[in-house]
Length: 315
Image (spheres, rainbow, N blue to C red):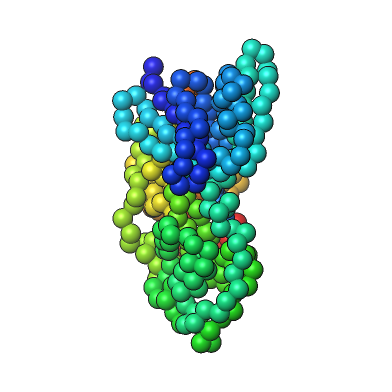
């Protein structure tokens, strides 16, 4: 039997601060979802005593969860997630405490207000000034944007920015066609190409971040021309924007129904030649007590071609 190690640290500050709780011997279940706008997570801890539960529910709390399989590398699956809500209940014979968390960046920056003009308003300058104005010091990564778009000058010499950080970023997403993700203290911006400009991005030529193999699968992958749904063994390396190489997956299930396959004889041939997909939404689930230990990936095909249903990028 493989040993699934899970530890949980709880702190009173988003950076540094005092550790108010640690456990790696209790049952700990985790469900971390890396989704557009902000990441979120649910951590479930079994059979804590009253003092431990009180320490988790008094004041602001930030949760870090680390995992390890067997004697392998220790991975941080969630880093300083803010406890937004908590629930404690007894379901005999267990006492179960759930922590409902959000990425700390949502707590720290999303509601802070912006009210200024951006000079030379390229997308990069706008994003940098918005995040600089609220004191964000972490990474800002633009992924898969067409050549030149990030630094393309605006139509006017200045641009007013009003509203909170989340509102400002949502307006930019609509204008420049991208999604925003938050993890590891950084903001990550992933462009959504269509048929007219996918060839001008780095998606078709970039080396994959992760090569997925059949032996790591927990369920039969469902792969289509423009999207793939994959359930693999827990792999903390996989995040939104990760480029995945699916060429080593030998057992696949077409996402199309029987009628589609009957009237489209080249369907399988067309999608099987697209081996690179980009992770759009990622869920990490596991426990040190049950067999759950998986990464669930919703990925989209970045490969150019007339048969690529790129409308899926907008879903």
